[in-house]
Length: 591
Image (cartoon, rainbow, N blue to C red; front, top):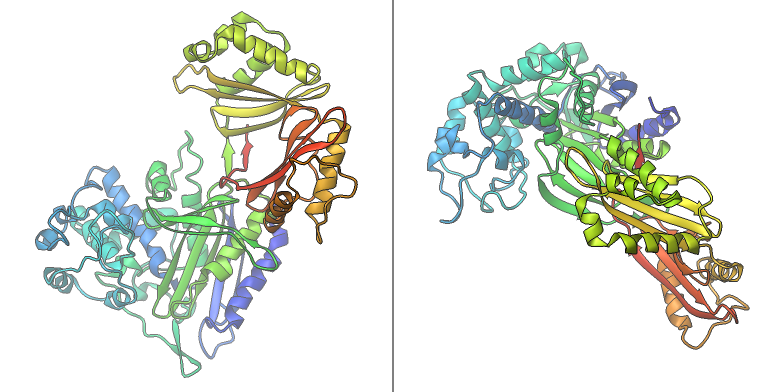
């Protein structure tokens, strides 16, 4: 279990602030780590007139967080061969057979469209929340009256509670069991969510958090709607304790592996399928808040879940809920298994961005969480050893065993051997074993070999057959900069990337260096928070007097390129170029 105890006080404050801001009378919350509820608490009150805060065992309506259970039930039926995701909805809900499509060239909406909010129906918050209690006959009559499409099916994200209510009807029609009972017996019970369900009569009154709405500057109790045909969109009631089990099941589907887990009610592959972005709907830029940096992210809807790709931490999965009387949010990081749950008892008071999401980011920052953990293939590990052996002493037999058939076609072996020998010579010969080993996939990796006067950067990629061979091999010499060049580069960084930038005193440049352009480039670097110290090694170098240094910022890298005349030490080129980093780049290799 990761060491996250130091963040619990901060999380308690975030949740307490959510209540004191007047958003809700109360909130219960919890932190999940490695499948265990490791911290929980409550703030405010569970019921008006009682000075008792909610706890991890207090029952709340979880609203649209219900959608993940509805989606799981659909996939369970799919896995059993009882339905097809790409079949028209009308194949399972006959009332939709006569629905008029928006255009003559539209195809009918499919089950997958409804799972991914792509059916095209007009968005229906908050109307749908007030339909929860209608019975089967009323629902059928509603459908027979026709539906309005805002978009043609399968093209655009439009949040649709109606679509998830129809998924509930599909579960009932296909399984022969009312969807509330199917979800209860096939998902809630196996997961161990004994305090969760759709029906008020199943909830002990002393454990229930009343729902509330605010009017005339005071809180009022919200009447509880009984379960009905629209409950598949948001009708489950649950607790932090129970939802911690569900979050653990979902997060625990990663990584893929061979062992069995009897507590999982459906295939792990289906759980992972739920957590893949299927329909993109928005992206946000990273921004400087004045105190810290708020990450940028792109967001897509999966199956009953939202998948956000955070620019630092990679995929973060979540879903909010807003309902008459209640608001909720669950969010987790599949790579680390860290998650946060928040349940509030104020109308539409979802503790998403301001509480639960920020709490998870605090946890991830505390452990410096990677975006991805990579387990190298055995062939990749062996290939690194083989390539290092070639670099130490070329051997055609080893190369024959390592290389795929394309390698010698892409660059004749004699040329490759000469290029590698030249690279080793540029760094003064190899002086040590592999360092800084990183990977972007299980079949591709990069590392560094130190030399007497610089470093070699090596990268390999293996091909995908059962017997893997190296399909690409890159070897780049990065000579160590001459002392005069390093001194000049350090002076430029010191003078131009700190406050009140001035051209460095004593730095001699020739007429080709545009000081104004350099100052503008430095200003762009400062605006992205570029590092203000010169790295120990250049990112690339053509010679001891021609080098580029990577200065990392919050979400971008600035490259300082500097070239110097070897004899006069006059700077002949100087430039700053800032480019956005690719998202989710930080990975760690696990054994």
